Image 1 (cartoon, rainbow over the protein chains, first blue to last red):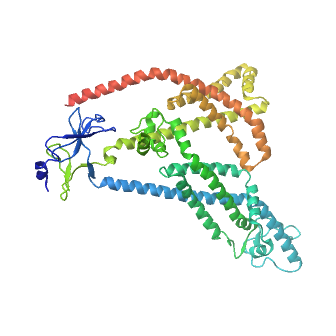
Image 2: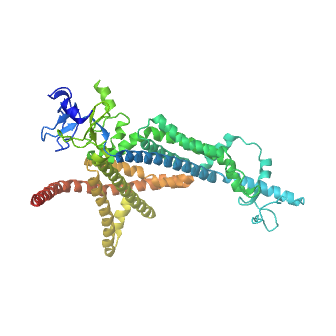
Image 3: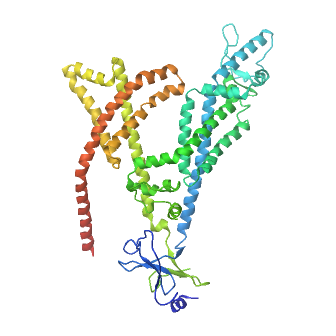
Length: 329
Length: 215
């Protein structure tokens, strides 16, 4: 079928028949007149639904589908991929931040345990050396343990300690006791981490603008799961030289999992709170900082939670279409 | 499939060779409505600008307040009493420099009030001043985060018990100086409005004349 056949066989008669009315805002392509309220007609030549501009007579077609050119599609794919990459990068950054906070926590909270290890190691070495043994056999040569004038080993957290000896004497400590010790050792960092995690949760819920809160909560658990994977895989265990490590290093290894548990608990609680309150806070910030004339382009913040735009906001739509349908029905 | 403008409507009508359905090809929103992107860009820029400015003004006020409260602490008085005392007890040759220092700080804060009022013009004056007071009260506890992070009980007690009321008083003085700027902007804004509108219409008229001359 060609165009001539179409022209010979007009769609639905020779006279344009009114079908409906334009309900939304639509500008005329010729003179930018708002066609809202204009009659939609089925034109006789092709059977297309069109509305004519009452000002300049330019027809506005309503059956528009095939796109002109391939670039719009490519750009759309590029934008979508950029968004996905941004989300993946944000996931990676969250993971790195959680790992960093865990390391900082173990660094802060390991003092007490490191001192205990150093003191017990000094006692052990001094006793063994008094018996004529050499407990420091196999120690890295570059490490010079700190000794006093009498030649006795002085307790010092940077002295190298035999990890095997520590494993044999440490005993099986209660995990929850360690977690409790870490929480106490963190001191005021708990408050600062909580605030940072709350902000992180707020950023995530705004980044995942179209996601529901439970889905966003699952997303923030992904980097936490990777941190747990690192902890369980014992990546940080057994580092040091030939089974020797500083007392401070051993203490950090010992409490790393407990520190991770504390940090991840804070992330789940305060990140979750950020997920809950993030969008209302973002809306509040936009309302506070942007005048009504500029809020329209950020209307998705309201539409995603089925909320009407604030009064006076200039936007093509004032309510999400689905919500409007529900209200009108 | 090519879609040249049809002879009847001059629209890029595309007819399916299989079923004969006619459609009009359209351009994508990305091409036909770049204005939407520009609006989004403008909104983000404005959001960043307003947020940055508010943070900057709050930070400046906090810095001034911390400095004032530390200075006042040396004399064992509050910042307001210490400032009045400094003016009263100053020798005549130092009076000018003291007023210059106070005037400069006051001027900076008043300008920040003017700029804030200009950026947040959609706020009513009283609401803006109330919200600004709330922001200043909130940021007044920020310096306490340092001793809290180290859990230094003595420093926390000292900061929240002795320095915080003094800092709050200094921030109240900063608030008064910034509050002077808000009505200044609101009063001058009305005068600037018509002149800007006149300038815009003049530019528009010149552009039309140029177009007419160019044919």
